[in-house]
Length: 289
Image (cartoon, rainbow, N blue to C red; front, side):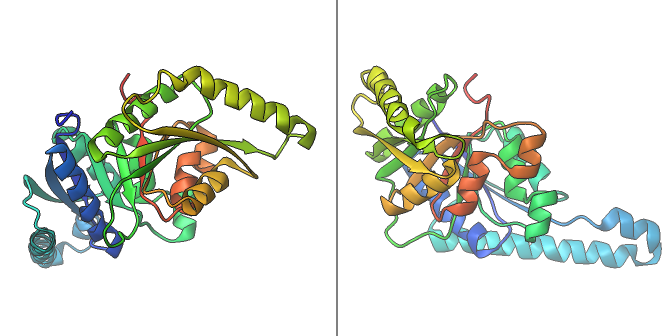
């Protein structure tokens, strides 16, 4: 399974979270014998300024080169600090989210690793941070990380489920990751109380556990697999709270929401990423199709 993940794209904006994401990229690279490509995207204000202030074109060019040089130095420094040798370093300008997707496609990345950073709360709601854009458009899995903790390892993986057929892909992905890290998996179903009468809860629990039993033999041979059901007001609240309370190391789930509702409210995965302090490995809807 060493060839499962061959190329990792680490995208950094030099924030604390962006730099710490290299820690996770390195862990995955070592376990899968993969290579890491580093990417930094600088803002592109050149065209607008050239048209309005053509007399400062040369100054803008000099400053752009300075930004590129500084970015190169910071990436090299981050690599040296972590003991990472990059396959390639890419420094470009433009929209961070779009450039990350382009680089993932061009470099044939199997995994994107990036920190959870963005603009203001209002901008995240109306526009979406770079992480939101990548989650919604990436053709490959995206590992969105938080600040790493000392002696971090992946030994407990949480996989939320609602028993749709599409989830077979994320369960298989989680199993392959678990085998490389010698980790266990917990399948979690969150029973959302909103919209249900309490008298229905016991029957819903029974149905959920029956579905777990049906799938038990097919899931996770060679990997310890447990299952659990919890009650919560919403799925994201239940998932993030359970992961925190049970001290999981990684959450694996798909970004399956689409359309206008996701634009305004965010998918379950995006909300979990917002709520949790754990790394979340998100699979795009058509991954493995």
